[in-house]
Amino acid sequence: MKKILKGAVVLLIAAAMVFSTVAVTADTGEEEISSACGNINKNFVGNPQTKNTNMIPFSGDRTDLFVQTPLGPDDPEANCYTSDFNLGHVVYDNFWDINEPICDIHWWGFTMLYDAGWYPCDPTGMLFAIGFFTDAGGQPGQLVCLYEDISPSITGTGVYYEWAGGYTHEMYYFEVDLDPCCELSNGWVAIQSIYSPNNCAFLWMNSKDGDLYCIQDAGSWDYDVSFILTGEETCNPDIDVEKEVFDSKTGRWVDADTASTALDAPICSNVKFRITVTNTGDCPLAVGVDDKMHDSLKYVGADPEPEEVSYDPPFYYILWVLPNYVMPGETITITVTAHVEGPDCSIDYNHAYALGVTDSGVEVEDEDYAYVHAYEKAKEINMPLLKFLQSHPNMFPFLQILLQRLELN
Image (tube, rainbow, N blue to C red; front, side):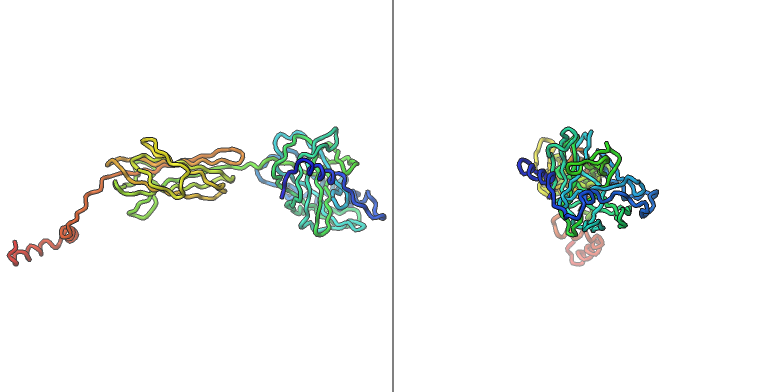
């Protein structure tokens, strides 16, 4: 689980990240482990003139806060630097002019197995530590944000480098959301692999987009490393609300949203309304729904139960606050039952209003109406014989003849 640690725990982990070293076998040169990718073999694999779309990290609606892109396989200055806990190396690079929280980080590099030389290694299951530090006179200072046991999204770029030694290595693209976001306007970031089921080490691809200065352990390189810091994801919120009334004669919900299309509803009967709220945007929304109903329609009940029902003549006000986010494309349905009070021939409305709010506080809203025409229902005839005659008008001539013959007329 990604988290930020505070106090002594943070300082202890920071010290381990910065100062940890692991002994290297006597026949292995420290320089060889710290930089595996130098002296690139110009017989690279692939066409460097063909832009691979996987080199571009993402297409989502996010704000780029700081960008340093990797050098391609055709660049003679291409290199990469080991940043792995078990091999005793960590790489830092600086950033500046950040004007909002850092919520995501994207980076490029290689995963290799070291065994008296570097070999391609499957990155599946690798875990990383990511730290953000203040700047202390051109060096990493105090640890501000630390994310442990990070399992990033790892994507092969389809771009291959054939380093000295003859092995071909695919460059990988890594990305992860930082939860919570890290607020640091300028400072340093370190990324270090800390675990791999395949004993892979992470080697960070270099860049020339910054100030040409990064730090590995206590030394430095005259290059940058490749990463992008991005802000909070932006999205396009939208919401739709529909108000309908149930026609018991047809068994259908109707959209009686104007006075001229009002549904006929007899006085002293119950009528049902349906409020349908749909998240038509691409952001999760916290949603509240308000229903305003004229007192010619008396509130009876609702499903789900509202948070609040109040009556301020001549209106009932009914409020729901949905307990969970309404996700993009999700629809929530509310039904309201009312008793038709009248007066006769009145046409009154039931008004639904929905408000959606994103995590960043952006508000969207929508409203809809449903109209009802209240009318006085005609008195029913209760006499069984008259009701029978009304429904069988062709029986009258026959009854007259029958009565005459029986001398009852």
